Length: 164
Ligand code: SF4
Ligand code: SF4
Image (tube, rainbow, N blue to C red; front, side):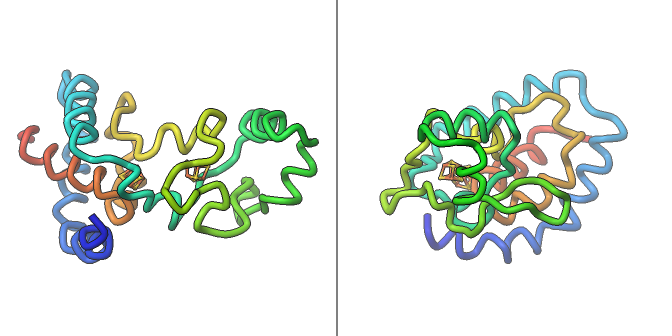
């Protein structure tokens, strides 16, 4: 798995133009069954890929923290929201709360998340490959294929399965 992760930025770069063209066509004319197909491709991929062997998203990017995330996680730690913010977060250029540093401070050496049950919504949903109207997040997906081996494989499978 680590070899694939190390090689992923290069592989994603090689596929970038092909993926861009595919997503452009997809957004112009998304197939009626797209949500269903994406759910299938997502489930098939995550039967093969175990995030505990990877954790590359937690190591290299880190999520946005919404107000609800901050409230839920502060409660879990039994500290005030402001204290949680000061200890772990910073504002990015879009004025969103993000981690002060990566790898994520809540990631263990065994790749387990120490706040798994209360983790941010963005962590629960990453890499978003089972979301509805998948064609609407193609720019994000073009970036995610360089980070997430599962997203990379899902996009490759999409191009084989969906003929545009
Ligand atoms: S979501 Fe993707 S990048 Fe994150 S741990 Fe799972 S396979 Fe790795
Ligand atoms: S909160 Fe948990 S799931 Fe989210 S980036 Fe950190 S370690 Fe990963």
